[in-house]
Amino acid sequence: MMIRIEDLLGKFLMTAVFAYLAMEQVVSIAAAFHFRHATPAWELTLVSRVVSLIFMAMVVFFTVTRLPPKGSASGIEPRLTAIAGTFILMVLIVLPPGNVPQELRLLATVLIIVGTTLSIYCLWWLGQSFSIMASSRRLITHGPYAFVRHPLYIAEAVTVVGILIANWSLVAVIVGIAQFALQFRRMQNEERVLRKTFAEYDDYARRVPMIIPHAALWRRA
Image (cartoon, rainbow, N blue to C red; front, side, top):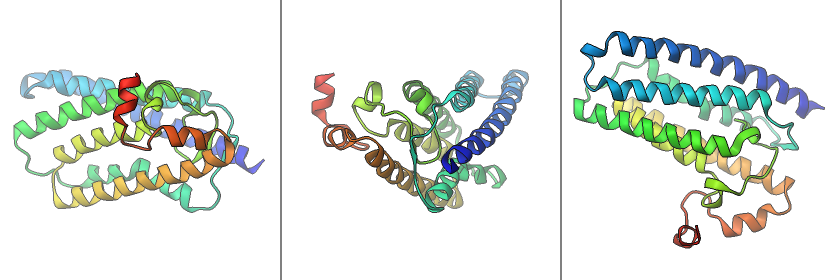
């Protein structure tokens, strides 16, 4: 009963937050059009914002339609880690941007596009099993999950590298390191819940690595 109540509360908060972020992204897309003549390579900026909007819209959709949880991590730490890992990069919004050359800004934008596009692909496969909290709903072992057990985190890491380059500073690097540490901890918390819920998870974990795919998996594909 408590798991169900927590899931409903989390669903409401996640939907509200990401719906707001999606609306903000719509405004930023309009701004990209308006200032296109003053923005170098504005097409890349536009694409990065459009794919980000698609990702946010998918997060809202799959949060609203997600399956009820079969299990959830116990204690406050997994919950705080999940929230912090998801939103810690928002700290960069209030920090002054670093002095980044235009070439690096273009590289950062490309990385954000690639990472977000990969995140969309992974989220599509994860579907109704998506959650920011360490919980178990349905075991996904196909698509990108046939190569690594946590492909969405890897895709997001590519995006994060792009964001850090675009906001380059010592504080941004520290925030980035903290975010990577939190995300790795989230993987560990999710692993414990999945192992406890699904008897077949141990066999899946023996065949498929956590974050770095084996060459044999690529050959088999």
